[in-house]
Length: 345
Ligand code: HEC
Image 1 (cartoon, rainbow, N blue to C red):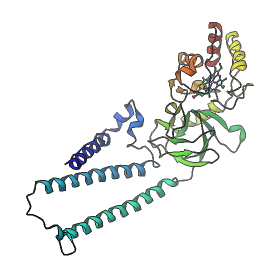
Image 2 (image 1 turned 60 degrees about the vertical axis):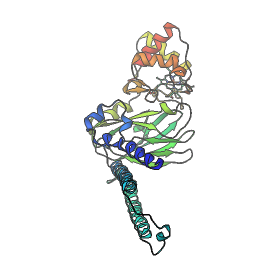
Image 3 (image 1 turned 45 degrees about the vertical axis):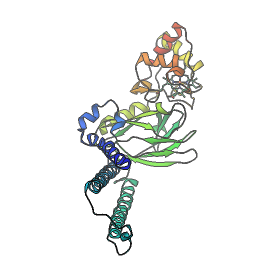
Image 4 (image 1 turned 90 degrees about the vertical axis):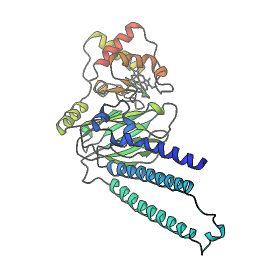
């Protein structure tokens, strides 16, 4: 009876997947927790794995239902007293064991073949990739380097990847410290980022939009706040974004901005880079085009002037363990720094 109860509970809990499968895509996009909907896919690197996942979920539910039915039938049906010795080779019972084992073996063998086909399908993009970049996992943010044959066209950004819609892009995945894992569920399966190793991954988005990603290898205290966004946009918008990102910071006009710049050079330049200035720190997000990003601190806060200053003053409180200290600034310093940061678009 306990076994039966367990089977029924498992079956019911698996059935909670079903509403996820039938939620319309519009609802998915409006959803507050986009990672919950990994059973949807928007690109060819994720679709085969998603179908495999659905198939396995469906099969598991079917097996649980069949077993429950068989058990219920066995419990309900009145049967004459069984001679236990009859299960031996002359009895009828052994036949069912052969049949059951045969069916399970066939199903499992089919699944192995199907899984291998899926692995083969997602291993390589369907067409050659024109665009490549490197993503490096840091505790607890992502450095993104856009490659180009001409070194002057290369640039670095953080936490927000832009890609053109409908084109496969290739990524090299690295880690600067511990093991991280790159996962944008609607676009591709997860790939680990291992120190000393360069892993490869490709993604493609078939629809424009913002796709949320997350580090899925526990990497320390800030792990839960190591998110990223992939912005898929039309080829023209993407080209415009590339051109804007390649620009270096312009000069700072007002006295407040200049004061903010000096403060930045004193307090922040050791860690952060702003291209076009002497700030060349390598171990924190590149801030050259800080205001072009939707969010700051790897997805933690929306990027607003208010949040930016809250972050600078309270980084340790907002993201405990973050590799950026909190800064005690006077009102004048805070306002100068805010003016300077607002020029970084
Ligand atoms: C000791 C190194 C260090 C110093 C000094 C430092 N930062 Fe940071 N900063 C970081 C790191 C590391 C991050 C990424 C934190 C995270 O998301 O976990 C960061 C993130 C940021 C971000 C968010 C960027 C983004 O795109 O997510 C801003 C803005 C920022 N710092 C501004 C400043 C300013 C302004 C100063 C000086 C007052 C400063 N930082 C000083 C290390 C530093």
